[in-house]
Amino acid sequence: MTTIFCKTAPGPWRLIGILGILGILGVTAVEALAAAPVELTILQTTDIHAHVIDSLADSRQPDWLKLATVIRRERAAAAASLLIDCGDTIQGTLAGVYTRGEISARLLSHLDYDAWVPGNHELDFGTRRLAELIEQVQVPVLNGNLTLHGKRLRAWRMYNCGGARVAVIGMNSGYLKNWFRAPHADGFEVTTAAAALELLMPKLSSLEPDLIVLALHQGLLASDPRGVNEVNDLATRFPEIDIILGGHTHRGVAGMRRGRAWYAQAGSAAEYLARIDVLVDTEQHRPLTIKSRLIPCAGEPRDAEAQQAVADLIGPLTALAASPIRQLPEAVSSYGRPGSGCAMSELYCRAIAARTGARVVFQGRLSRTSWPAGVPVTEQLLYDAIPYENMIGIAMLTAAEITMVLTEQLGNRQSYVFNGIWGVKAQVSDDWRTVRELQWATPAGTRVPVAFHSYAAAGGGGRFPKLRALLATPAVQYRTTGLMTRDIVRDHLRDSPEPVAPTVDWVIREQ
Image 1: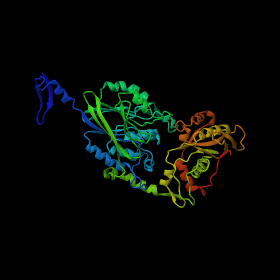
Image 2: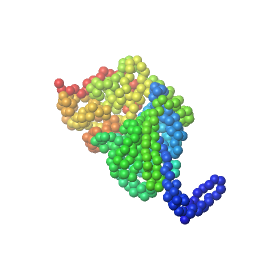
Image 3: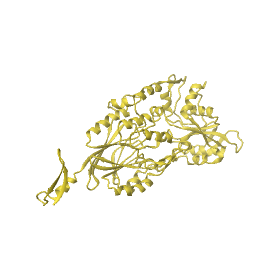
Image 4: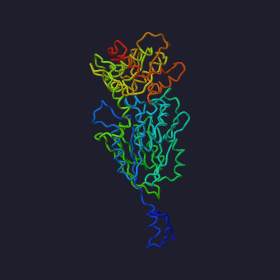
């Protein structure tokens, strides 16, 4: 005899005796009933970068309030669902900077996300600010390879989704140390996702979840020579993982198989919602089918309730975005190469040198935004030109050290992270690879103050290892000024009698 317990309504639990012989009811029929597969849906956002609403943007562009409309609709249509964000959520627009991430934290809470997986840009306002937002947000935060001020963040969480036990693991990028240095790097430690998963997976697998989801702020690239993204390795090394939700690379991936795992990524800037539909066998603890797609949000109306949740922030933000800083008599172009023909980077360098006393400045253009003549430079236009939270640092360098730094920069001349030189003219070889001469009369061994922004000083994401190593040596006396590039340039525009000067070709190529 086989017995099962079932609940009838109304009434108490009833014990039902089943005389089990095959052909009448049978054990196999009962087992089949118990093994009925579960349908569930995973909804993913990533790399929203605080694209909540922009009063200056084309109304046809996507934003988080339009995405919220899609989220509500897809949730309502799903039998059971989980909503997960894979990071770079709080910084990337004037809204993010103005509220220091609060506007994003509010929407994560308001839309009742099931998990938030912070990314690298969550550290842009400092580790203490991230810790504050983690306390403030009413959402489980998963980041198993990140430690903040001695406290390791939670790595995973088990969810009951429509009767299926779904384990969601959250991981950041183990490459964080190559993007930040003090003071931004103070207070955090990070390991690779692989190292964290090696410790976690045996315990998690022993709990026999029906589905394992790895949600991480890393992307899937065919070629990744710097080793920033571990997705290919993780999919191979941990076949227990059923679904990988990616981010960081800003690429939309509707869905594809990577090893045994299914990979999806929702793009960036609130353009898409990724929807992954799964049929789960809760007896065998495995997915039977997985299918996914990207749902665009650009043509959707903004969600009224979500907009109301941040209305008190949007009003002042809209006024701030339009507030004028200064009207310039001539255009300032971001085209050309920093150090040789880029008016925008020339302006940045002059502002940094005037504020810090630097004799030499290494600086890039930071974006492709140009300022037209006769149009006031507003806070929005300033942010568009300088969208990063870069802090200026000063090192005391010799001519030989400056030459070494410039040579390394020239090796990255085609990259968006390239920093040109300002303050001293340099003659370089025809192929741009060798610095022939610095054209200044400075005694050998004399040290002069040289300015760098914090991303370059941290090594530019692994691109400037020689600079990073140099700034770690005591002889150069590297120090941070506490001054942000955007603030320096704003003050320069307001206060300088001639904020824009003729562009100088500081790098001169041999003919």
